Image (cartoon, rainbow, N blue to C red; front, top):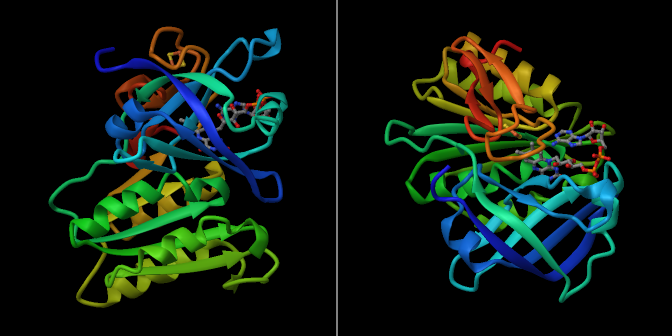
Length: 267
Ligand SMILES: Cc1cc2nc3c(=O)[nH]c(=O)nc-3n(C[C@H](O)[C@H](O)[C@H](O)COP(=O)(O)OP(=O)(O)OC[C@H]3O[C@@H](n4cnc5c(N)ncnc54)[C@H](O)[C@@H]3O)c2cc1C
Ligand code: FES
């Protein structure tokens, strides 16, 4: 694949921001200047043989001016647990920038972004890019509880006139009580009933949630993109460990995705 490079990321901060949720800020200037919304890095966790395979992480935010990137990660296994011990000055090699990200096209005027759990993070750069292009953006964020809505402040801080952020929590501790798919359903219905329907939906989060959002978008006749998570061995298109079935045959989530048109997928 052309355009890929190796970069040694340097940890600047690694903060616990919620239950099992950490915000990792790294100095990685090449990545910060090249990464596009929805792309990811494949990072080496340690020299421990259990972590011989790199782990894929989406970029939450990138600042080409100071060379910093942010990754929001959830602890799910031994690799992400090891990452929680990283301290300022620790180094981690990464391959970057990988994958086909969100499609930013001129025909998007009103967008709905639906993020569940850590899926809120890979949508943030997309949200920034859409807002900067003057697109009206509605964001629906979902989490188990208010203390897991860890991206909310950053979305709110964007304070863009055409941006609206709505939340749902399973326990009702913030926003509506229930799932962010309910917000998406209402928003799509309201928009369809008005003279300003959505023309783009993007979603990232647990697969069952994304399937519901994709179906809602399909019913409302709105184009929908989803960001798939697959176990990835090589991360660069060579090993086929990440294949997904699509209408055009098998595709590799790492390089043909992770962002796919929902209608393309056989899932
Ligand atoms: C393109 C892409 C972007 C991602 N971005 C993020 C992100 O921004 N933040 C974040 O927290 N996580 C993200 N993930 C998931 C992250 O890569 C995994 O959680 C991580 O690799 C788990 O490593 P581990 O050693 O802790 O877990 P392991 O011990 O390897 O596995 C623990 C559990 O996690 C599951 N798992 C492992 N790897 C993956 C994977 N690649 N996709 C889905 N499930 C997996 C396993 O099936 C198992 O149930 C992303 C995955 C992909 C494919
Ligand atoms: S991870 Fe090897 S082909 Fe996708």
